[in-house]
Length: 156
Image (tube, rainbow, N blue to C red; front, side, top):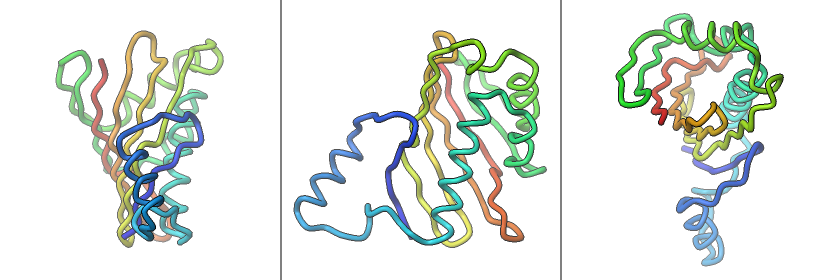
């Protein structure tokens, strides 16, 4: 199992990062080191693709990275929403993108955990108007390709 914390979009100090630094300074190894295996790179790539497609309003890419049987459930302003990812994808593709509108969108990959052909990613987002989101993506590798099979979220 490989676990690491990395963000290519925003630097966000967190308790996990501070614990990682402490562990590394005390000579710990392995658990928090950035992995180099293909599965970890694949999970990182799908998280990066999710963030870029959300920012750019790229519905085609979002459809490609979500599994056809994916579910998407969560809370928006305290209201429970349960469905597949299509309403989110349609919203991202039919409105001016966050990039085109100049929205102050920022996303941080807070956590990635990979075990064989499954993984989990936590992404924090800001810049959807006044809302901030925490997203938990569950991914799996099928026929050599990583797909998002579940997204749970909270937006406030």
